[in-house]
Image 1 (cartoon, rainbow, N blue to C red):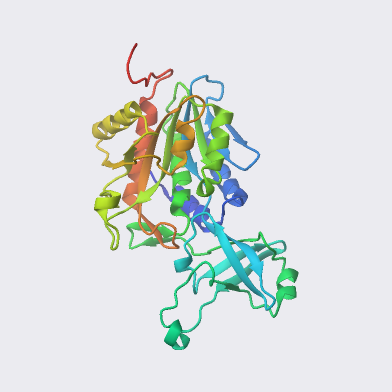
Image 2 (image 1 turned 90 degrees about the horizontal axis):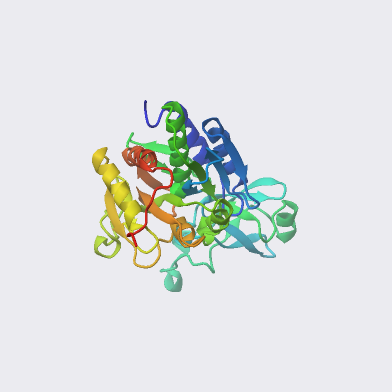
Length: 361
């Protein structure tokens, strides 16, 4: 059975092309749940939009397989009298890439198109010769004459903007799109559920396939849903930096390369015994695996799960990504397949009431 079949790749394209900015994830979550439903026994959604499907919902021992659904975006913060929009970050949006980008503006009357404007190179002379984009000078043009026209479009402070850049398969080797961080994760955990169903594999515990909201603004969705589910084990998947591209120092950020397989992280939130099980699984199944370290926090939903409910045994499996928080995020197709395979095989090795304690007393 193909790990990523044609139907799955079509789902990935649809899922990535749909916008799901932080705190506005509902459209993407609907697409995700529609795909997941045939492969789980039960689906649910919490008050803020985190969605999950459950296999064996009555089991007492609970394992979470989690990703986050949201993407970086912008909020309208100010509308000038002459009709230009100024913005603030919604998540870790990069102001350096904004000039000359098209945007979708999710107004109260539907999507309005706009562009991040920027003065022509011919005009940037003298004191302006080294003009660079900053949070104070980037702006959006919707073709309005004045503030009144902007308001009539349904745009107001608090309106969300996101980039529309579409999905592409680059030279049959890489998936490229905005929002691969981390809807690639939502795609991969859904494939684990599909493979369990299609391969008729049974797990002796409750398996919760969780797609959390609001990771980009502080792991908020994961912090809420872990209190709802109260899992015993959590395996989180997210993206990590491919440090082999120009202007990134591997000495500072670790040696991780796209095409060489997923990574696992060592650090306070990542349980050593669960990591050992993942590494053993990768070795037995001949799945390539890279290693990373995090000195304090992982910066992912792993932290929210690990330090909740008296301590949840947690691990982080990451997908190497190039150009994070840009509109051309890239992941190797081979890495996506191997990450799915690693999560699938690890889930099959966890037993009901699995004991991950550090040592016996």
